[in-house]
Length: 126
Image (cartoon, rainbow, N blue to C red; front, side, top):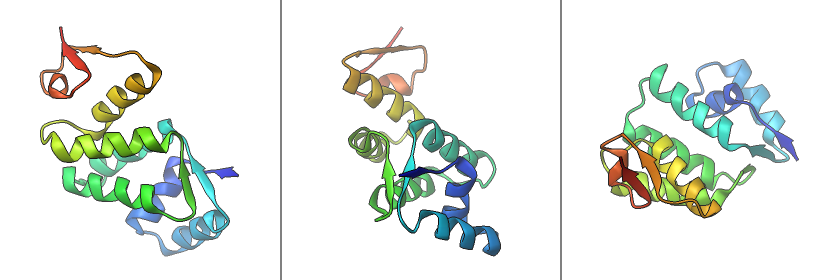
């Protein structure tokens, strides 16, 4: 299966360049894989460059999880992080993903100085 980079995902989500959107759709029409680093980078771009809020980020992640031609690395982890994002209003998706990746690997709690992140089950404020 092919893999995609951040800029391809951003085009599929934001759809702000019709030519690149069309090329991205052709590339993923037979399936494509999204690594966790690409997912995190995509979320950062959507927030920092396009100004998406928590709800917009949640919608974008949901779209990627439910896409019939995209496969996410550790989809179960991404789904749990997405669910945590919906429950924990003060925490960003990347923090939720950090905790869920650690949980899957059997390495919780995650030590953090981040007060908001420490609210997530599996994180511990130092």
